Image (cartoon, rainbow, N blue to C red; front, top):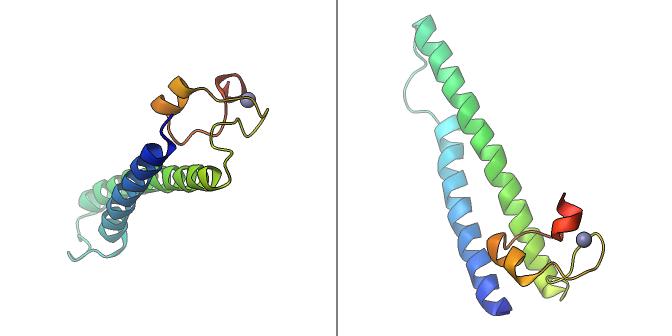
Length: 107
Ligand SMILES: [Zn+2]
């Protein structure tokens, strides 16, 4: 298994996630347009913000998982399950490169 390749892929995904998060964050917290005076518009806007915030939380979680995987590569424990210590398996790592658990423990 080519760990260096996985590492560069993880770093690329992380960079992409971070730039997306930055845009999302700006979208939520640095609005250029003034707050609409129309109540219905405001409700719609708030619902929209809620959705974007949920996406942001999801993205932050994914970045945390990628960071964790990168640490595991540095520690040479990347191929092993963080829970039971058994090999995670090549197929599973290829499908979910930032997972830290084998399929048994993930259940
Ligand atoms: Zn396990």
